[in-house]
Amino acid sequence: MNALPPTAATVAHDTPAYNFAYLDEQTKRMIRRAILKGIAIPGYQVPFASREMPMPYGWGTGGVQVTAAVLGPDDVLKVIDQGADDTTNAVAIRGFFRKTAGVRTTTHTAEATVIQTRHRIPEAPLAEHQILVYQVPIPEPLRFLEPRETETRTMHALEEYGLMHVKLYEDIARHGHIATTYAYPVKVDGRYIMDPSPTPKFDNPKMHRSKALQLFGAGREKRIYAIPPHTDVVSLDFEDHPFKVQTFAQPCALCAAEGVYLDEVLLDDKGGRMFVCSDTDNCEERRAAGHRGALAGDDISRKDRS
Amino acid sequence: MTAVTSAAFDGGFRQPVFDAQTTFRAIMDALARPGRRVICRPLATAPAPMSPLMAAVALTLVDPETPVWLDGALAASADVRGWFAFQTGAPMVDQPADAAFAFVVDPARMPPLSAFAQGTPEYPDRSTTLVVSAESVEDTGAVFTGPGIETSVLFDTRPAIPAFAEQWQANRALFPRGVDLLFVAADAIVGLPRSSRLRTG
Image (cartoon, rainbow over all chains, first blue to last red):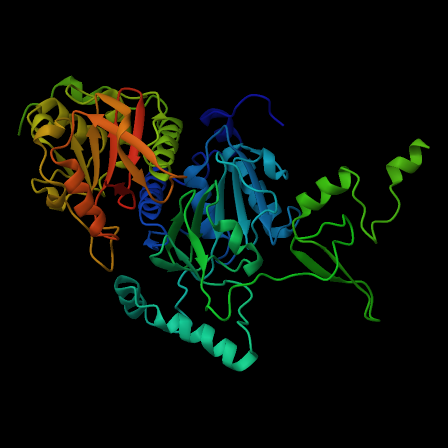
């Protein structure tokens, strides 16, 4: 990695046609103004003039634009896709900012100053100096209940959220419990109902009074919203059906972590399966610290030494 | 046409990309953590009575897409108006309610907060952000709570905005409509978004 902080000149050397972090300054100012409005009105979706990015919609164009607008040469960027640092989307976006901004990247949650995420919140609690940027596909929590933007906008203006409670109630009527497991609607600072993006509801409690600033970017839908630090984020529920997160019967098969979100991995075509941490960095750090799960196998490094 | 002196051409960011990013992060931090003094070295200058840090804030946020309103003391200076025209290209407006950004160096004589754009119920973001000079910021005085504040925060700026407590309560009562404030001292920015509640009694 380059030891010197990148300057406009060194970045320009590799990518002569682009500004630092790809976006032009006029665009960054427009996005920055939208971010400030989002912070001032927690949970409100601020319209912004989303640009075409050199990646398709659905691959995080909103998150990438928000990241590009806040990123500086001293930042350390981490990108996760469903909790993993090593999946296509995460690798591609990390590479994009290494190339266009020359910033340092990392997979370690604690080292990062800006974390762009697709649908997970890291297991390790975030710190005050960190910024979490979410990639959001559909920012409007009421969209599947009311397709007209003019109507949902009026509903937000009037704080008319009965429809959302009807939807959760219909879940209970049909399934006996609230069956929504991801993109679980939250109320921010007692005012706006907000889509936390398709994170599992397991992560909702982490948004509540988080120390880190949380920014949300939806590129195709052209919306930016935000949750400032220390802000109340309450998952909607009913008195007799309180909000509950998923629980797992077994710990992570690799690092034996409990109380974390697990992915199911099929092992063969005979029903074999394992449950492993969705947050790869958390899992790797636990294994490095000596935690062993049931399917972790032998520790080769230790064997070599003996 | 007024004659534009060379003062209009001086004082821009030396490194526009990185200086704007540095200043923006301070502004964002200030708005995300209301009442906290966020240290920010001024990276630009402008003709008096505009302070260097206020100049940097203007260069970071203002461009031809944002109508700007200047208070009497700023608007009286042809150099300041020339500086805005040359450095930002922002259109100037006479009515505070038409402004996306308002710059105030004389808080004691500024119009009431309610005179600025408040946004609409559907689009509360269409409101004015006020950038207000502060000679000093004290961590005493009024107590604020709300998003971005862990428990509560005390702060006070001098010179004061007239009847600020009453004005701020009226502003908060409009939520999600209302204005956001950025107080700019010599080397620090303090944000006060509309979401902040003033504790009384």
